[in-house]
Length: 237
Image (cartoon, rainbow, N blue to C red; front, side, top):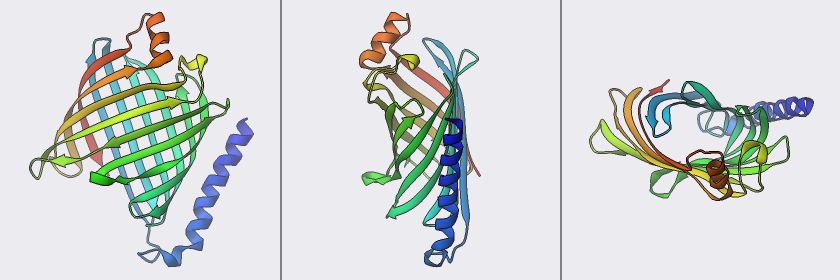
């Protein structure tokens, strides 16, 4: 399986390089290369103790072709519980929409790699949308949908409502996940832009497990829902 993962990564990266060279002449900016990267870190707690979250997301490329990197770390009571890193080729296929293909690797709660296919773009009413399908190296199929909206009261002060939903096509007992909608969260961040590149915020969110995933959590003595409030900062590079 390791050899297959390496070959798949090389194929995705090679597709990005070859496609970028083949269509440089069609790039709106004459083949110029740009980049954007942001890092977000927050710490807070809920009824189950303190929680930390670190997330990064960024790309390098042109208007049509991009190489996209992103990842997340989730900690609970000082222990790393979730860790994932993505690498994707991203191609613009419509106004404000990219088709993405690549790999995701989770080191926690267990080491698992996934093939990734999905879309990243701007839905009506300016909802930033990420919708991705995953196939693991165990053959499990899952999906994730995320949306958020950046709203300003003034030029610097505003709020950002968001939600995330996770789905599984089958039961995944080794990860304590049930088929169907397994878990989700909905929340709002209230922020103040000191500068466009430095944005502190307060985050309030509601987390919940659903269906068989919730039943597994209850049987293990865990809560199936929680409210979490955190302080965080977002940095743009």
